[in-house]
Amino acid sequence: MKTILVDDEVLLVREMERLLADYPDLEIVGSYTDPMKALKEIESTQPELAFLDIEMRTLNGLELAERLLQQNPDLNVLFVTAYDQYAVEAFEINAVDYILKPVRPERLQKTMERIRRKQGIPQEPETLRIQFFGKFGIYAGKEAVKWSRSKPRELLAYFLANEGIWLDKFKICDDLWPENSPSQALRNLQTAVWAIRKSLREYGILAASIAYANDSYILNLKDSQWDIRRYDQAFGQFMENGSSAAGSEAAALYTEDYLAYEDWNWAREKRAVYAMKQQRLQERLSGAERSAAE
Image 1 (cartoon, rainbow, N blue to C red):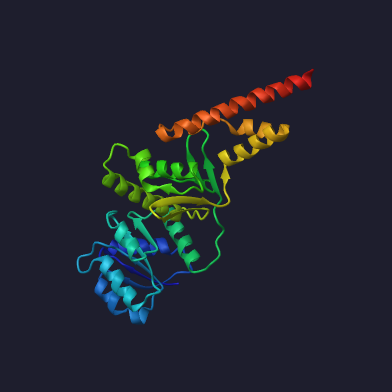
Image 2 (cartoon, helix red, strand yellow):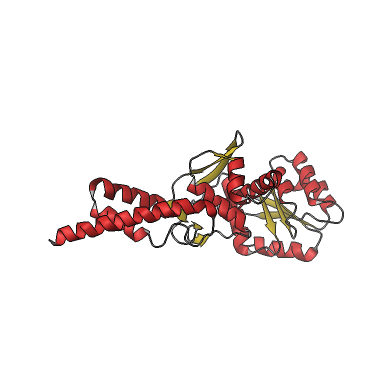
């Protein structure tokens, strides 16, 4: 894939060249400290991928991207910058990714996986694993999704707790930002949804997606390993037909209370519901064991 690098700091250009040397499918056809030169040479370099800094002295990277895309609409643009305040603008021009400096090799690898998917190169999807009993966690394969802020993490848990249900945006605001004004709460919600979508992209998670329509959001979940879903299935089987295997599976899954370590008001009702279900399960299991011993 023909690639250009544009950063007005020569040492940073060299560092990106070093990192990208691990990707033999990339051919660096231009390394520039002058964005205007990159723009002038686009007809001869014909890049498919561009790594761009944003804050440059002669031409802002966002403007450079727009001008490059005018000449080559199929160009994959990727921003590498020390500043996070341009992220929304970057994705508005359909950037493939937005990486903060210093660039970590593992972060770059996720970006390259995303680019290959966009190019139609088959990728092995990461298995999504979700944990609700105990401390909330979401995992892409073996890697835990990390969050720089707490609210996107809580909002994702909230969406999962209401998976497959359309949720009015004002109800979400009341549940997660009750202390804020309506306008501020809506801004917080939009920012948190954007952060969730960004994290799902970064970790290559394709099984979960958030849609928006008619002032409401919905989270759709495809194949995943989710302790709550497995528990509900096993609990239902045990209560319906007394399957000892299903009862034992449900009991083993309930390692701790529902979202036990999360101080989220909206989770308290379901925590109580699952605690009661588990009590019923244990009582029936104990009764079955006594009957078998007699």
